[in-house]
Length: 538
Image (cartoon, rainbow, N blue to C red; front, side, top):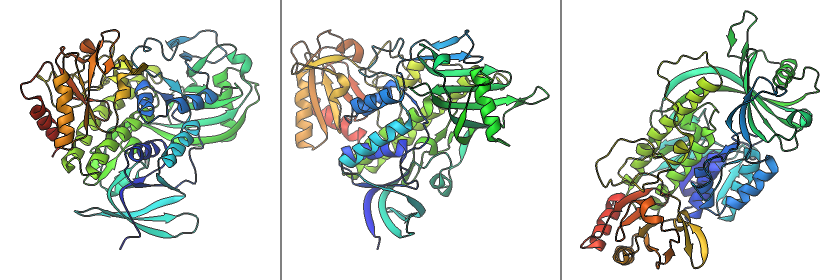
């Protein structure tokens, strides 16, 4: 007999594992999270977070806490630039402001926060919601059968082993995932292309930085390719080094080999353009630059998320954001299946949706690496660079959890500048008023499905109430318009969501449009019940 039974075991308590825990706990799903390290992150990685990620945090009441923690880490809304050295007066701008041009797309904004600042916020929220988190605990083994998974976990402090029986296992155990390896899932994509290093250091850079608000500084010179991030105090930061130059003038992409403190100091000084500046190296982290994703994000009852599912270079800041998207996409599915509301077939849509999107994002990160960092990489098969806001906010999903309302045009992304409300895409952000409070349409979404009807769509709202009562399905409805429960002061809802006055859209718990009717139906309750049954794989 197992020592412990839980619906879900989460292996890995870093960024994506904690995000999974927060969302499972917020939806009332008992689970256990185990993390082999004894605490949260000690290295300030994954500092760039996009609007979609912030929308995910906003949905569980964390936006204010994350923004407050971010203000302690970095000056916000800074520039992303490329220089030969920090001392050089010449700069190439990728962004003059991190939120330039995206301010109207969301109720949230992009920000910079390290995992050191973010993970404690997530951990505290998970515990507030009742999650059980065990740090200093590692997964020893697991075995699947038709009914569930039996895992053995072990405390790293006293060696005590515990047997855990769970319905599902979520692998959030990083790029070298033992769960993925034991599940026999291969990585596909590009082979590793650099052995890199991140140098965490102290140096007085306040005069060099001056009054410039620099969020990310790429350093591009023959002897060194990499990027800086600086602390808010200007006296510390880290330098990620992708490559340097061999004595014969060829590129050295194995900078992590034969690396000592003296060479680390030399790298920092070279990138700063200050050969005599005092530098203290605090830590060094070696890592491999690669662009690949798992051949499958699922092995029966095991699901991969985050770096266990995909690895990509840091250019574009997509890695951590994509992992958080995985966690969000998986958690609502596990919640509805664990509560008996949805059939197990709903879980099939996780791999169907997230793997193609991850493949696209991995290739976009690689494209940015090749164009911004290492022009020596081959250009054959290089994906054309796509628009950043569309990558962040515009993926189009296709699976059994989406019902199209017309012929599929094959679009991979939609442009948030031209919201359409098409099934499979993120529901557009529209400012609305509810009981005198200004909210985003995103604030209406929660643990269940939400139906948004046009100004003349009361029949859809009544249908949602009938379906929720008679069929006991998790759906609620709102009429959006000049006199609706949800007031649309700018009249933006119909155009943004692509519905007429008597139409409606059905939005999933993850904020993705699942189904849409442009106008009325003769038997709206029957239509909605059938739609919900298909989406929930009942």
